[in-house]
Image (tube, rainbow, N blue to C red; front, side, top):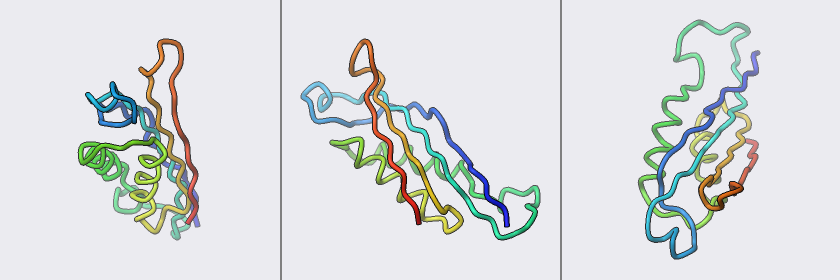
Amino acid sequence: MADFTTMLAGLSLPMRIGIHPEELAAPQRVIISVWLHCNYTAPTLPDEIAAVVDYDFLRREILALAASRHFNLQETLCEAIASLALADDRVQRVRVRSSKPDIYPDAAVGCEIDRTR
């Protein structure tokens, strides 16, 4: 058995998120990072993409999710991304972090969740 952590880090995308009037008026930049704690049953993995969780799929699904609707809360966004990741049975645990870096001139605001199967 092999345990790996696969990550998609620093995905920067414009999306509609937030509750304040200026956030409702226009998309804003959000940075997403996801850590997938995966368990593979094979003692050694073949050097083939089908043998592991494909982060291309996760990136594509996050982009589609972000384009699909307005999110009021980063917590809701993180939960939706965690659900996407846990759809693959090989993912045993997922950690999702979102950050809105442009809210304040001197700080980012964000959210992080950790979900276990």
